[in-house]
Image (tube, rainbow, N blue to C red; front, side, top):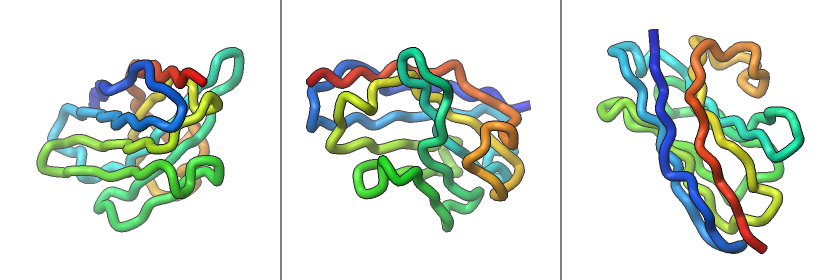
Length: 124
């Protein structure tokens, strides 16, 4: 099993930055691709970014390209989401998740472990 714990959320002004972290338990972290999803208020969960097990491949939803960067440290068993130029539309609960595949990484269905989420609120 993999347990995921997110941190780093908070309140930030529009144009500001935050870095989310997701710490994973277990010795198999480096075998999993990782993804970040978010759920805005009153909306469904949506894909944000994904990174392959080695970190060599990344993928982003168009709305965050050029502003967000996903990365991972397989020694620290941690995946990060650096978020810059935040705007009100980025307000959401952010979740990290793990998947044994790098296919269809935009779909929540392929992820088998999820964190509890961390709130990001951007004030305009």
